[in-house]
Length: 429
Ligand code: SF4
Image 1: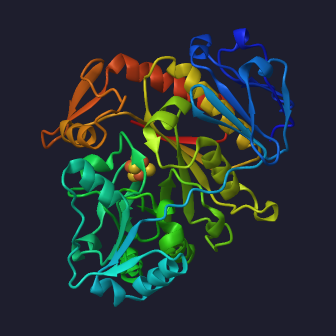
Image 2: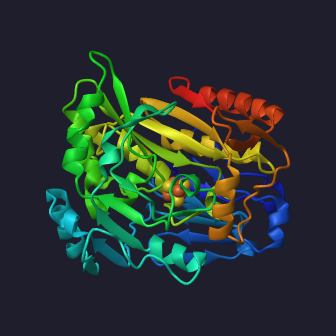
Image 3: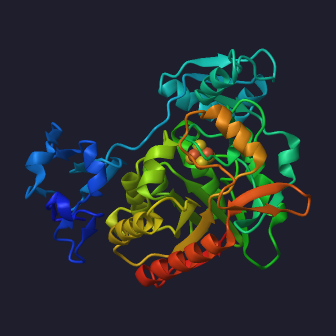
């Protein structure tokens, strides 16, 4: 995407910019951050070369059309010639219940994990054991390193609505291997945060048609309790769901991810019935709070590959960006401007693109869980600058104050539509 990357005088640096011709990029830092010595990694083939700041001025880093720029944190920029390898989670334990092994998909998952040489344990009965450690932190660590393959309980066959994201939610797994310090699952799932993949996938998919509206499109969200792409190399469940929806007239699949291993999805017969969304955020949020996920640049490249036409090696999918959670941090306009600029550069071809804009929020319950999981987190979950929103059942949620929300909504609507005039914003919340 870039023909060259040029680093200019540090005194001018406020944020990074580029020309529309994509001939050069100015990479920049807030001068304050220079107190911490920034390091620039220039990867022009192997090995990776460290460029000292004193030598960076007037340095031109030539790169290939596929190069990416990556922020690992606020004072580090890696310039790589090729996208990094996709992020693949490899659990330390894979536990199967006997009932899961009776299922055809359970056997398919067993074959995949055995091919990856992962250690397999089989429970004596259909209850998961050994998930807890000595304290909350140890339990978290143990559970997040475990993949459990189980049978989804009967309650999951009675689908629940999930506005505004989709008509219905269904689950191919529960739990996620990443470590986002704001994770919305903290308030939704109880018990140790183990990743459960469902072995009775065939029955789960067969059940969906019952909920389709007659003669009208019906949407199904598969990412309410998991990041389906994070598990795809271990389960193949997302591919199977995409193939299933490819055979439906009115059923549409929606999923979202912070991972990037999209290769297995590119050749599937999706028949435009699946919208693939990638969750993005401003660089400071992503680098500080989204542990274990794919880098921002890799996620953007994954989105590009999902949308590219087949003849250019892509998946030709309808795509979406989920900007979540949008945070009103210091200089938020400039950080999100940079993100939108980056994405505008990456999606430099016609796309069927939607947006979902979700501001940061938390409940008292999810705050307690997150603070026990991430006691040293820099995530601001104070009441300051927040309004309390109550739902009809009386439970409370902390959202940004009305004035901040109004300002942010105006900003995102304006900035998105100026860069992506043919895209659609589905909702702001
Ligand atoms: Fe939670 Fe999503 Fe992060 Fe996974 S990727 S930890 S589900 S916020």
